[in-house]
Amino acid sequence: MSRLSVRDLWKGYGKRAVLQGVNLEVQPGSLTAVLGLSGCGKTTLLRVIAGFERAERGSVSLARRVLEDAHTFLPAEQRGVGYVPQEGALFPHLTVEANVGFGLSRRERRGHAVDELLEMVGIAPLARSLPNELSGGEQQRVALARALARRPHALLLDEPFSSLDASLRTRVREEVHSLLSAQGVTTVLVTHDQEEALSLADDVAVLRDGVIVQQGAPADLYERPTDERLARFLGAVNLIDADFKDGTARTPLGALALRVEQGAVGYGAGVVMVRPEQLDVRPRTEGADGLRAGLGGRVEQCRYYGHDALLHIRTEQPNGGEVLLARVHGEQALPVGTPVTIAARGPVTPLH
View 1 (cartoon, one colour):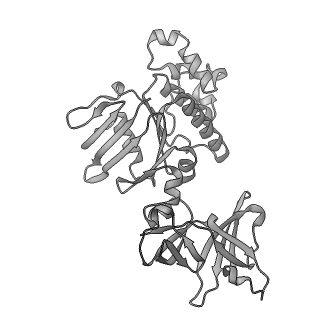
View 2 (view 1 turned 180 degrees about the vertical axis):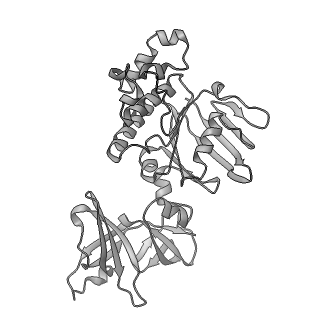
View 3 (view 1 turned 90 degrees about the vertical axis):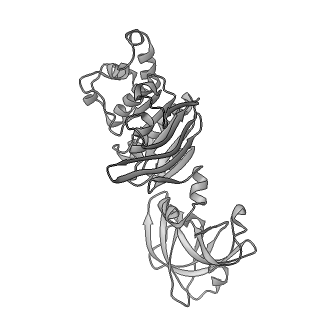
């Protein structure tokens, strides 16, 4: 297994700076997702790692071998890096087995290597088919098999599931993840889909304004984002005013514990992040005195998704209410206008 390391990488086009000091570490055999908005430089980063583009500054190393720095530049074919572009880029006039075997030596093509790869990705019966006879998911498997055929030290996936419909996308990406995990291939997946990154990756790196603003396990990024902008990018969020004292945030929802590593934020006013799933919502009877157990509010919107629902709740506060987002199980969805009591579960994260 091979570690991939990118250090202080810079790349631009003309006067437009795209990568501005990117640092990225990909552990051997892991899948790391590079997450960012469209146009943020994700594909440029992959192309520099693959050797299709040359960086202006910085270094790329793989398996303790320098691929590029101020003194070295290995061409793409010598890097031991596999690349799967967004649309697969199959040769339309070649069969599936010929596409997969492209780039292999004649001896390797005559052996069982191609057959084994087709079996591994689950498309052996389609060996003699042409790309236009395949579904989108099947084409992506062919592209993956072709990238794996040369036994790369690292595999780069450039939004490979974005062109698939929602149900097929979920199934194909799960199958690909299982395959790569079984093979122990060091993999970088770039995506603008937060759900895809958080659910598939061992590690997530968020690319913004030409730099990696945070990298870590999916749960760490979701629960402990470095700033408000990142918190909102990773999912729905409530930002609630708080007073900090003795490792506790005092809020309109009550006193909430801070995450252990953030308990020493000191004293004074600030803001805490509360994810919608951290809110408990209970219907209340008009006139009941149950508000002592939480904050009162009324459902303004209910977005029902089947497995869950997102409630928009207008709070009842003396200085004017605000809208909080609460995620509940689908069967607990409440009609618009329902009076509720809201409570929160900690720990929570202070934001800057």
